[in-house]
Length: 340
Image (cartoon, rainbow, N blue to C red; front, side, top):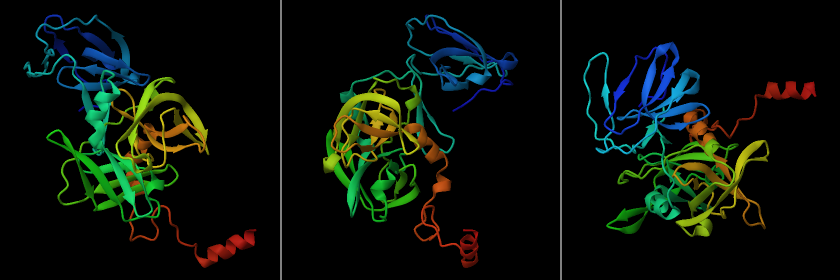
């Protein structure tokens, strides 16, 4: 799926079915994209072209023109005519097409498009299987799958100093929830200073897991409703709801999302969702002896960590893994002492 449109791209022409509106995005070098504009963000414009959704960088856009959308009698997306071939691929996509775009590294997905808000009840039923309980010999926390292959995110402090980790997942089976514990879990990467860890379930009998999509905390506004799913004090699958209090709470040089959503020990590493069902943060702390003062790591930091996970790769057999350093050579220590 395309992530950007360059100026040298040939013009794409769309012919609509009756009643289906067409918007036009004029690009540099006289290139044009026509379709239905789903969202206009600070740095990009999202366009539904029928068979896919394109995210066009603002820097490549010269102008946009909008038409009023009306209900399509056929409820079908427009057909696409290719100037080079003259052929028109068919599609059964509906007018309310919603898509997720895989990241460049393929380990997580980012939701794009005009996804409507839904109730917490609906979203919990849909997303609950993607949230897990992370257990270690010294405690427990929460986490969530970002990949169907078993990659999941949690907090670094949940697994700090531990290598024996298990993950408990609730699978839907004939309308019933079945609890399953996976014991073969390894640490893939960890960022101590960002309080994030990437784990992988390697059990041989593990199925394809339900993954959740990552959103954008930058798109949130103060007062927007958010909710968390996690295991506070070991009470798995607990749902709490609140609002976003501020997007710029600073602690020790890092910015956090502050929320009134109730967070307690055991919630750490769990997802904070918006009402579109997208992860906008990772819950990781609250102020002691207080209520309604909880904090989450913005999802943009999670995406950065996943994109650069090789830099934080963990190897239990390597004494020089990212957060355990060897003593400097003796002559360097002597030189440092002389400089003092």
